[in-house]
Length: 175
Image (spheres, rainbow, N blue to C red):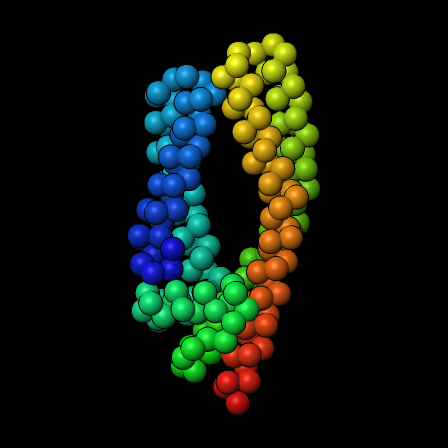
């Protein structure tokens, strides 16, 4: 994502999200027009929102080349020493942005629990009263929410810990 500019990031993220949820809409409804609408609306909205969010949390990214952004992100996410001392400040800034994004999202975690409960009820309803297509789509939604609730917090904590380690190493390089 970081190799290209903001517009390419928006198109890539939006395109992937749009295709994925458009396919789920097709699976759920069986209506190609619904899938196309989900692809366009969700893909466009999410792509723009995410690209803006990425720029807001790491504004210094625009001053780096694509290869430098990739180097910084890779070092921070792995908790490694950045190979180029000129990029040390960027590792610290990226780490700060990761923490800020995580903190901003934390108050909305309850919403995921609520959506999981609703999705579980709907999956049960669709399994008993709906078509096989509806049941499969509901189970996919349920699985996605379960991943968000049970896998992502651990992975996020690991990423934040790695970013802290990389930022601390970068601070020592700056001295």
